[in-house]
Amino acid sequence: MSQNKANEFISLLMTALSNCALYSEEHPLVREFSVKVYDEIGGLFVNDSLAITLLGDSLVFNEVPLTDAGPHLHSFAKKMRRKGIEKIMMVKGVTADELKKFVVAIASTEKVISSPHISVGMIEVKFGADGDDVDALVRENVGKVKSLFHDMNKFRRLEMVSLEDAVIAFIATLKREINVLRVISPVKSYSEYTYVHATNVSVITLFQAEALGMKGENLHDVGIAALMHDVGKMFVPKEVLEKPGKLTDEEWNQMKQHPVAGAKYLSALPDVPKLAMIAAFEHHMKFDGHGYPGMKRKGKKQHIVSQMVAIADFFDALRTERPYRKAMDIAMIIGLMKEGVGREFNPLLVENFFVALKRIRAV
Ligand SMILES: [Fe+2]
Ligand SMILES: [Fe+2]
Image (cartoon, rainbow, N blue to C red; front, top):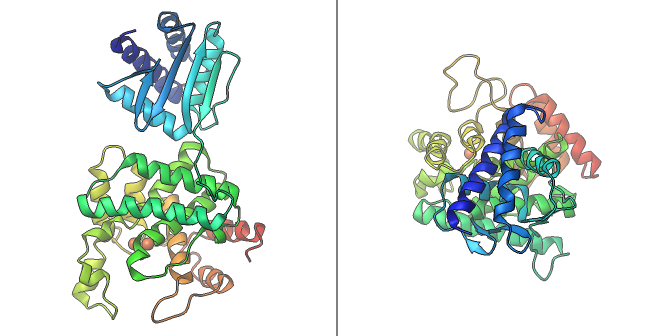
């Protein structure tokens, strides 16, 4: 089997997926492309089966690594990662209907499940030896973000696979330990503030988003957006960022540039979801239109995900102990949030957060 044939097949599969995203399951184009995929399969079987495996951010097709990765291959690998799929195996006997259902499931936000002739192997989130110890999981998650941020600060490069893996691990950790307060970690020193805060904000935002019923790739994008919300701070001078005392007007102006700088940085990276740019740009805007950057265009509303990030940001900042004040308890933070409802925060989202915390008996 040549690489070309494998490339063509995956391109066809991606076109079928795009049609599914645009049209209903019954649309002629969805049917047409599913049939085209089906027609190609026979010629690709090796020993009556066909396997596509995700390895890092590349694909292996019937044990042949696909090296000259075009845009379709790249998109399909990304799709598999986001769906949590490690391996797809099709065996002889697969029907056109089975294949169409599979294509529709991959295009949806639902989990892809195996059928008689198509087996789907899911990525196991590896938690290490202390897999059952929540504190160890949380430390591991923070460690992932630490190395991601280290590379970003040093090389201005963002390793998408590591970023996506970190968010997959957060979602898995929240599944294992539903008490979000046990999944967020304390900041022990100033040097770790950046990545611990980013991790916590992502986890708290995911907690809210799940409570709203978000799932699948949408949920994943929300986690990425929250993790990257303060990325623009790497462009703020260190003396300003780490200044222990009060900032001068000029320094404060520099600090206030971080949402714009972050959005600009993220917009130059092709694989980052748009939502990340939006949340980076808007997380200091307020529900009533105040905050920064100023909303010059009238009627511009803060995106709901930026509103959730703003809640998570506020919550994490207040529960962290600072040299000038102690960490606040949850009830007090919720009280302050409720005071800010309608001006600073979206009332429905504060309620959603509060109810979700109550459900896990955190308040
Ligand atoms: Fe910020
Ligand atoms: Fe923040």
